[in-house]
Length: 150
Image 1: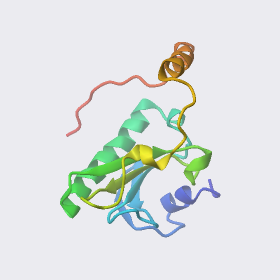
Image 2 (image 1 turned 135 degrees about the horizontal axis):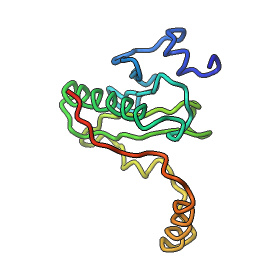
Image 3 (image 1 turned 90 degrees about the vertical axis):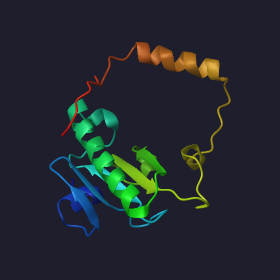
């Protein structure tokens, strides 16, 4: 998609500091980093949400996330990261992306829930019941199977 900046990065039509690439995913440094090494991992296939991808496609993207995380841990001597998946209209770019943000003591960051502040007006039991009604009416999209990669 020509109007998607991430698709243009994949096509090498837009500059980016690429740190990892395979046939299914690409990882590059965030252009407005929250932390040294703040990296975006994106699928090479354009899709806006998790349900736009097959289980095997998602598996390959998250394999790339795992590779990037291991490199970030070694590079920045940390075992603390915030990893967040963004998609949808408010994500900034309409292309599934996963932030991998190295964390450090006293970095001023918070828990991942701190990025949104919209306290529910309903109690948790009511919310649970509402979600479960929808889950029961939806066919499973993903079927997970453990496979070990060499």
